[in-house]
Length: 417
Image (tube, rainbow, N blue to C red):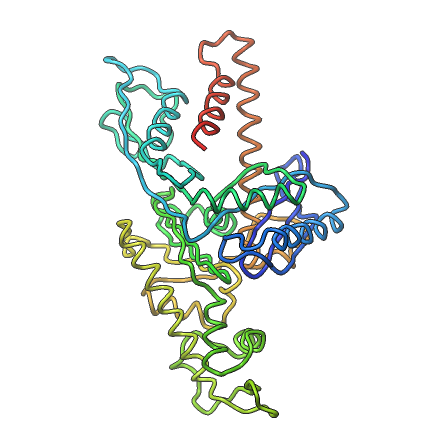
């Protein structure tokens, strides 16, 4: 297949990742481009020309490394307006048990989407998470089974329309089209979570510079999605304000000497800084630096907890604990901080399932970009299966035409979006 290009537009940097998938389904990364984000703030476009230039620069570097041109991208979307909800609905099939097919599933998804529509928002994703066939619960895939009625719970993710449209305008002005769009949190989950973790219950926290995305999985399916409009940049600004230094110096000190738990830092340790207006460096307490970091982390995680609680998530049921990823997950001591704050096991999530440039992209900072490639490949595979089913059905004159169903699905999504 042709090269796939993922675009992760962050607050601090833009990542363009190019990959090819071989005949065995292995993903080979062939190009990587990065550029500092300009004209972009927490998912919002604040200046079109600067944002276009940043995107174009990252894509140019990726294409030069890959030696391949690209005309379309797979886009990750997030922002303060992103939110999710779970919708339940019932579909009566027939008085007597009849075979369930894909059209029944799609009708349930359509019902969930229609009930989730909200002025000023676009539906970004709609994912069936569990089914009940007649009185049988725990049905994973009802297609092909017999039943008189089927109900489904669908997880719907939506995001502000203006954020989406402005981001899409940046891509188009950079001379590209958009092949697919996915919530950034779900892309990161695709890159770093295991099937076992999703089954046992897990909270993914993707902490970037300006946004902290999260997703909860339970019994193998998505349960909750959300975003907190704060991240590592807020910590950097706190350090800069407290120590009266520049943001650039604060970021360096955070990376080199910062720690997420103050009470484990030796009170005698010192960090050298150069405050604004001072001619010489001065030494400040590393413990105080850790206190500044911990206070902001506590605020961010408190807001994550509040959002989860409002969506009915019980953290005690997440037996696989927490997986932290994103650029800010590399902050020293953050694993221990989260273990203490949530009283759950925690691991740092590294992207898996990739070949090529492994040393470079097997880094939490690239979780979203790698996940976008994996989701795009899944989408490509599903479309091939549908196309194959269409050919088989046409040859056998099967009354259920999968191709027509796909066209209906695509038409439906175009209409509502």
